[in-house]
Image (cartoon, rainbow, N blue to C red; front, side, top):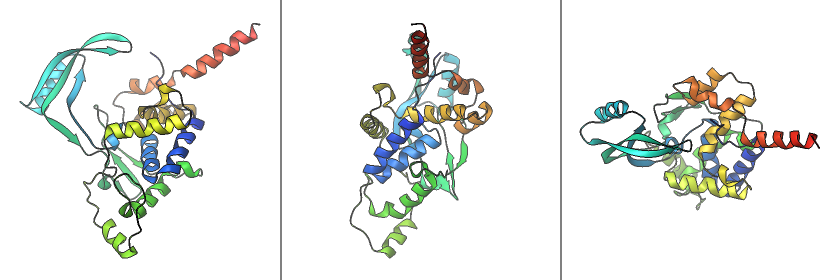
Length: 262
């Protein structure tokens, strides 16, 4: 087992800085992604026929029974940690649509996260930070003020009269998705800013955000059970992988050790 790929603190600031320079929506999205350790499908809208991938048929059949007759179990081969394994994929006849984060899930300075892959639902604060790039609470307030006069892509449009903006804000539906883009669009957005920030290809996917907050918390000395709760892990073993040394740290240590021998 190796440590998940994560960003250093400096790399994280570089990505957030690129996002903030270009589009408010993108900056706010990435802040939520990082602070709360979200998967892409937990943040934005998604649609899939895959209801789960399991290592045993028993678990797959249990999942199929939860869904009903419209689900099926198929035996497939997947490469897990570099090795091919026989798995059991549960699929549905009709796509499963997820709204991602909704306006109703962010209330009173808190965000309620309904996690996927059997992880636990969590409720967390919107975080403040002395560094403007990391000030999630301020970014969210700015988004609420400006969202009515921004299009689907979050780009600024012509200003609306103040009264009209207030009317629109007061009519946000609790079930309405905050970020009305697809999962693949989020991947492209992260890849763009990671590339502009000079990150290597292995760090140009949004799941690095989930790994980054966990790794930073470990480095800060936060106890593993608290990190487990923050990420919604059902098992402490899932959190334990973040205690492993990062590949770049190991590479530097090896280089330093070899250099001392010369």
